Amino acid sequence: MTQPTAAVRDRVRTLRSEDLPAYCYDLTALRNHAGRIRASLPGRVELYYAAKANPEPEILAALRPYVHGYEVSSGGELTHVRKAVPGLPLAFGGPGKTPAEISTALSAGVERFHVESPHELHLLAALAERHAPGRRVAVLPRFNLPGPGDALDGSALAMGGRPAPFGLDPAQADHTVRLLTDGTYPHLELRGVHAHLASGLDAPAQLAVADSVVAWATALAARHRVPLPEVVVGGGMAVDYTAPDSRFDWAAYGAGLARIVAGHPELTLRIEPGRALTAYCGWYVTEVLDVKHSHGEEFAVVRGGTHHLRTPATKGHDQPCTVLRTDTPWPHPWPRPAARGDRVTLTGQLCTPKDLLARNVPAPGLRAGDRVAFGLAGAYAWNISHHDFLMHPRPGFHFLGAPEGG
Ligand SMILES: *Cc1c(COP(=O)(O)O)cnc(C)c1O
Image 1: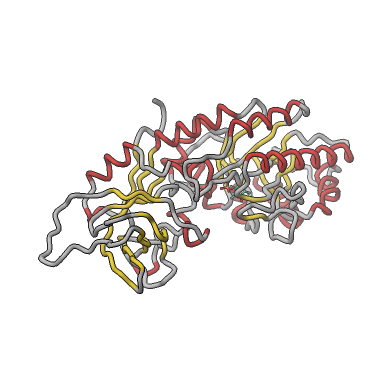
Image 2: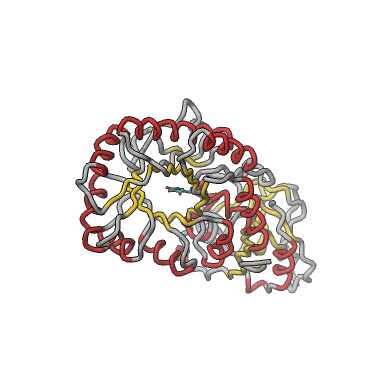
């Protein structure tokens, strides 16, 4: 929903100008959304949340009843997530894991390692001997598999099946399986395989990916006569910033996954979405500071900008937004800046033309002092932004609704 929820509107009404900009997260909306996603998934399909989308502890805790675990991509994330939601399984992925990070993960008892290269496999084996004596560490090598047909063509960010720093080349699959099953590494256990091929895929494309990854893994297991009981088919479920009210078709996706697992009775499938779980629960709310006319176009400058909400700048879109009019009287003797036309481009306070939040927004009569709530700001928003550029103050943070329980 682009429109802020009632809880967010109520909170915004209580905030003073100096309290803006602010990130408002509706945890009740998040829990409802996550509950619907979980309910659409069949048995033997596990849902892990990719923490890098938004690792705020309140968000991690709110998701806890609905996820089977969390996917972490750095030593920092794993320590942070372990503390925020103790007791839930973690899968540790990401390229370029350092020896210190791997040692930390082993000591913390991280449940699964997504191994991304031959060097990393050797390193993990050596460190497991030292840091996890007496237990076998579950390994799921990540493979850079080609996508099915042209399913990845329309994706926002394809990384599978083309040159990339992610995962192992499929040509290394047989050797990797042999190393993990011929006694070379007694401290490691080959638990399955991992793939994360693209982001921004709709449900039919995601199902085609899942089908082809499972078929590839099944053939690998058969070739080596080894079990591969777990297959991770990745995240990347689409969030459409141009159609903020439409959502990924979880019902169709869940039904398709049910067909896949029905054909593979020994298999547990795992998905690890980030964006499609948390994007919809966050709003970045701010206030119009100034409205001006420039060479035939109108601009509204808001408090804050892309140093807090970098998403539109990195993805090249217009962030969906809603104008919240205010009736506060104008406190100055000169005229209140206001838009004369129907369309206004919303920019931030940074001294760069890249500080664009949304272009040509229909906002007739927008005035200084009005407020704007940018939606779909719950994922890859604050945590990917360059906070210190220009040294403006940080936004406030409001977590609304109960993080757990009804
Ligand atoms: C980032 C990432 C995800 C989550 O991707 P979304 O597009 O946020 O769903 C899942 N798995 C891996 C390995 C990732 O790097």
